Image (tube, rainbow, N blue to C red; front, side, top):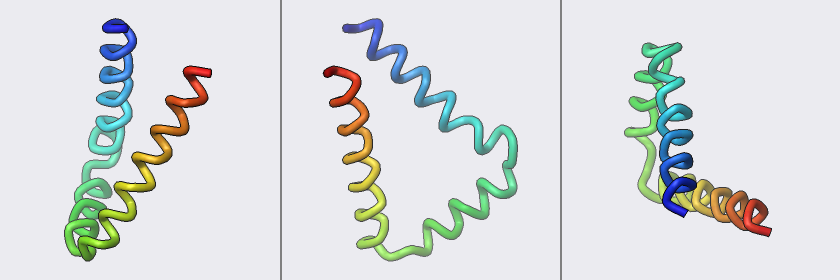
Length: 62
């Protein structure tokens, strides 16, 4: 179990690091635009990401 968690964290860090590594200016613009969005939209985006993650984990564990 511990091995799987570290693998997941490593993959997450790789996925999160690709944007600023390849296109730092585009990544900065995206963060600037996100910071100007209303809280309700950010919550909706966060909720969708959580649901997508739960679905992926569910299908992986089946």
